[in-house]
Image (cartoon, rainbow, N blue to C red; front, side, top):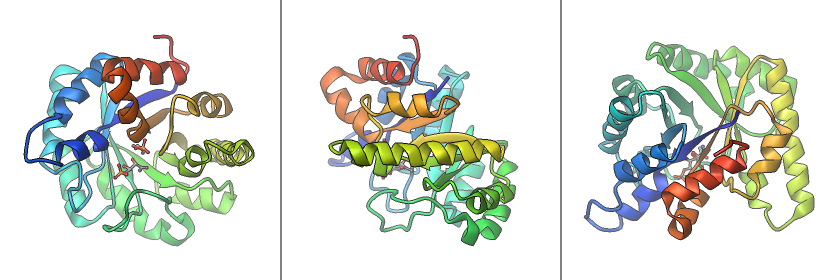
Length: 249
Ligand SMILES: CC(=O)[C@@H](O)[C@H](O)COP(=O)(O)O
Ligand SMILES: NCC(=O)COP(=O)(O)O
């Protein structure tokens, strides 16, 4: 079954517009978990444009104290500050992305052939936290790329679905991007890697993705989910996204 992890970045972005404590990422995270989300995801970027480092222990405490059967996934670039944060928090999953500090968003995965050696020591160090490791990956079924990903010691890759999600008004490109994702997932499976996915996923594009990648373990979704929550509320939105993942709600 494909699990849904709710990314709270956009909630934090709205909160940060003013020096006020609402909307609360903890309160919205609680509603999402009560509605059946398998976990929460945050991406505490160096500039704290949305999720701050202070948010992270509050959200981990929410899960460990109120939802001990759910997961906390922390995403980020493995600089020393990020490594120290996740080593202190010890989340259930750590997702490493190759983002530069100034990047507007995550818009590409790791080039494993270039970065495997660097990632090996980072993955090895972070495994001592007890977390599952996931590495952000472009849709690229090249066996050399997947072999390099395996050499890092990672448990999973997270397929970058931005090009797929961004082609929402172009059926031909959508189909082509979906097949690239599917072929990459097929290759990853053959190499023993678990498969996550994320970026610009919606209730409309999720069903085809889950159908093409039936063992897709987890999708992490924030931007469009938060937009829908403005219309339907967080609880009903989580239920809508869970149904789009094929879950019986
Ligand atoms: C890795 C990924 O695609 C997203 O989880 C990322 O966290 C998006 O970052 P922003 O919310 O800052 O755009
Ligand atoms: N890893 C993807 C994620 O957590 C959220 O991406 P998006 O839904 O905000 O594009």
